[in-house]
Every structure is written in structure tokens, then in C-alpha cells.
Image 1 (cartoon, rainbow, N blue to C red):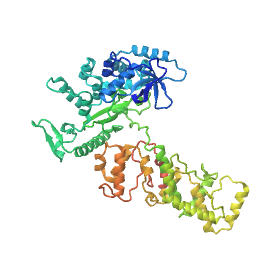
Image 2: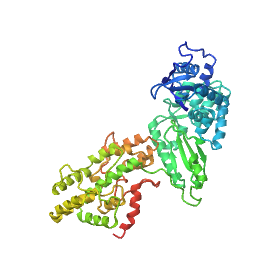
Image 3: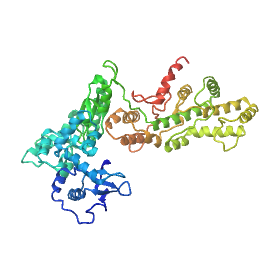
Image 4: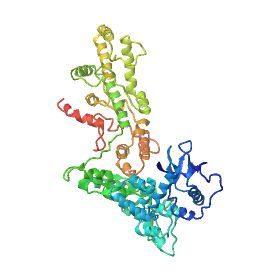
Length: 575
């Protein structure tokens, strides 16, 4: 059995349901509870021939009650469902579900207190859900009540406010909750509830001046005050966000300078869930989380680790108090981006090698002395899982130039014209002798040309020698590579992306867009490189990942190209 939340549109009554053919049931006794708190006991369902359709084996009345609420309110949250598997007995499953839910206090605030206690004892969300026969989302929703002010929780417990209102309030900042609570407790005021509350929280309101981190004197736009001048609002919200993001960026920089291991700036509207984290001091690797609401309110949570990271810390997997904070285990680049970088850098280096046959000769001798993973001999496979990366490589100037020179060598050696590589691989003795005799007939310059192509084919992508060659040959990647869509599609890390934005558009622009989505920041970089959407065109930008020598954007590690260069760069000091 699997517990899921399923949209009501994907559910229908099963023909095996004993009440399938009858008219809609009487739901008057359960409808008030479903209106106030939603469906608590999971429906029993099974797949209906497709992954997006399920039929209800048990729970028909709960289903009709939910449909009624959806018609009244315009929407309803997905319903908790227990999905039967082949061989499951419907009667036994439903009895087990009902028994488990019966052991759980029906009061949601009591459930919240129970779940919080279990979480502090080390129980995971999945374990709590399994204990009571409910979905993990239900557990997370109850734990989310911890974001509410105590007075709001008390009002919900006493049924002064309904479940829909509480769900919206869990998404509100503490400042918004206080404002709403003031309206709720004032008999002369009207506190929005239900759908109106959602509009009040997220719909087109001006941003109040009290949300600003920066001094109001630094705001160059117009501030609108009410008749009494007690409250003010920013007339230009775009200008507000620019100033607010710049201030958040400065705060982040100050926290990092103060010695915090990491400062995580959450995307606008993404809440910080304290119940998913544990308090951890700075000296034990604690992080800082900065949450920004849609109304611009900023909450800074200092000294936290996720529960998983905190468990590792208790096992002694973090640095000693006087040592440097442990770096994040998350690598700077994804594996797909690493492949993209390796192949483009490899293509550029081996193409540049064609103009330095003396270097190629010495490199081949080094292979003969020390060997390598490729010295069998066989060409580098140039493999990537991403079709976009392979297409990008094929369209690159370096790869096209190398392939053209390879065609020339195939002709010089008298090989079949449709041959993809000059390198023979693990050929037999006859093939080896045949190649040797052909080389004997060639002039030294032609032999060196063949040697350079063979060396390029057997040069291992992503290796330290690629980095060494690029540095030694003073290779400028800008002559053979430009940022393309495959590169931008693979670019995911927001701190790195913000650093690249600072390189292209300046730190002020990067700071002003600090909390924007990665998609938005990528588009600004594209606009700067193309000179579109009012941006001044930036010529010749090369990301540090592509430069020789390579340059990382963070100190997190996990960037294989930089690590390969770090292994060998000391050898060049005496050259």
C-alpha cells in the first residue's frame, strides 16, 4: 500500500464499490467537518488503467463531500488516498486505516504537538506518517502549523477560524500574521478569511516601508503615506526590490566575513521551516538562512543545520571548534555541466596542439614512458549522456577544425575516406606493419602532422594533462568557444550564476537580482552578451570555468577541472 495525495479530478467511483450505481449519498453529517478541516481518513483507491486515474474502492461519502466543498470554494486540496497494490484486501486495508486514524487525536493542533514531539525524538516525516496511516503531506501540513503565532493556533483550536484560513496563514510572515491578528481581535475591523485572505496576502498590494532593510533616506522613489502618515508604502516596487536585494547581498557578505560557513538566501516566498532544522552554533558549522517574503520582509535565521547535517555533526563528521568550517558537500558543478566543460576544453586543447607538433612529440614520448588510461592505443570516446552537449561540441569551431585536419591525414595515410579516426586501436600485427610502412614513405613534416592528430585523438578528456597543455599553449578559449544554450541549460548553481552575472553586468546588478530565480539571472547574462533588452553588449566574456588556467567561483570543491589543475600547477613554477 502506498499513501499519496491525489487531485480530485483524477478520482472516480469504482464499479466494485457497493454503492456505485446509487444516487449521491447523504453527506450532511460529514460535510461541516470536511469544510473546516478537509478529508482526514484516506480514501481507498486503486489504479484505473493509467497512472493519472484512480477508482475509489472505499470512501465514497468522503469523495462526494470533497466535491461539494470544491464546488463551493472553487478549489480543494488533493485528497489523501491509500493506493492498493495487487493482492491487497480492501476490507483489511480500510479497517487498518480507520484504526490508525482513530488512534490519532482529531484536533489538528494536538496532532501538531504530537508530531513535533516525535520529530524531536528523531522520527522522520515518513515514519510518523506510517505510524498513523496518513500521508507524508498531511504530517508536513500539521508541522507547518508551527509557523503560526500562538494566538492564531488557539483561535483555530477553538474553531473561531476555519482550516482554509489557517492554511493560508501558515504561508504568511510573522509581520503579516500580527497584522491579521490585530484585525481579527478588533471588533470594528474585518479580518479577511478563506479566499479573501489569500488575496490579502499575495494579491497586488503595495510594499510597506517597514519591510525595508535599507534606510528610507536611500530610497530615491516616491513613498505614499496614509491620511495620518502612520504607515507608508513604496510606489515603485521594482525600485524597492533593487534596493532590498542590494542590502540583502551586503548582509550576506557581512555574515560570511563574520565567519559563518555558509549563508543561504532563499528564493522570494520560500519559507524557512524551523522544524526541519536544528540550532547549531557557528563554530560547529552552523549556517545562516535568509528568508524573504513576497512583501519584502526579511527574516534572518542564524545558526542552523538540516537534521541530516546535524546528525552527521553529532557523529563527529565536522571540524574541531578551532578549525575552519567544513565546506558544503554539494559540488560546484553538476556532472552534466562537468562533461560539457571537459569536452569543450578537450576539443580546444587538442586543436591547439596541431600547431605545436614538437609538443605533441614530447607528449607522445611521455605517454610511452609513463602510460595512461588511453595508451592502448584508442581514441577518447567523447561520450556524454546529454544530446545537447554532443550537439554543442559538434557545432564548436575547435571540433570542426580538428575534424577537417583529420580528413587530410586520412588521405595522406591512404585510409578509407569514411574512417572516423586515424588511431587503429588494438589492431593486429598486419595492420600495425601496414601503418608503419606508410609512415616510412612520408616526409618528417607529414609524420609530425600524423602524430599531432593521433595525439589529439588519444588525449583524455577531463584529465590534468588537458589543463597543463591549455596553460602551456596559452590557449584563449574565446577564439573557439562562445556560451551557447547547452551551457546555459546546464548552469544550475545560483551562487555561481550570481557571480557570473557580476562579471558580465557588474556587482551592483548581481546584488540587485540576488533573490531572483536562476532563469531570470540567466536571461540578464544572455541580454548582456547579446546587447538586447536595453543592456549594453559585453564582448569577449569567458567564464572562469573555461579559462586556462581554470578559475572556480566558490570554495565548495567538487569541481573536477579545478582539482585536476591544482594537482599539476606547481610543476609549472620552474618552467
